[in-house]
Amino acid sequence: MKDGKRDGKWDWYYKSGGLKAVGNYSDGELDGFWEWWRENGAPLQAGAFNCGHQVGPWKRYYENGQLWDEGNYEDGKKVGEWKLYDRSGELKQTKVFKPKT
Image 1 (cartoon, rainbow, N blue to C red):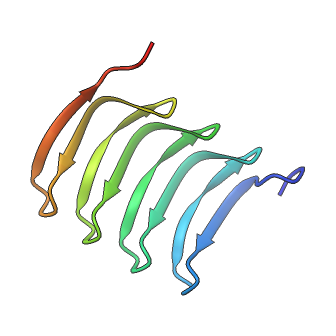
Image 2: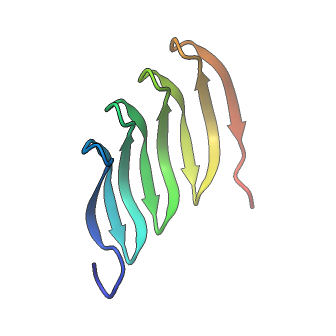
């Protein structure tokens, strides 16, 4: 903690003791690369923040660990090409998000 706000590297855990999330805070905001896992240890999602806003490449996963979707964020908004997969890993859909101006 710094000046009453979360700061630096933080690890979050489930009540069962398993790792839930790992990442950094800066001045109380999510900042830098973060990873989350399901209670069974399978990946949930991963990506970066800048001052609390999602930025850069992100990936989310199904309960079985298979990739669900992937794409990029810019200032907390989806931008560019996003790919959506089915539970078996086959590409299901591609969508392009245009940046808001």
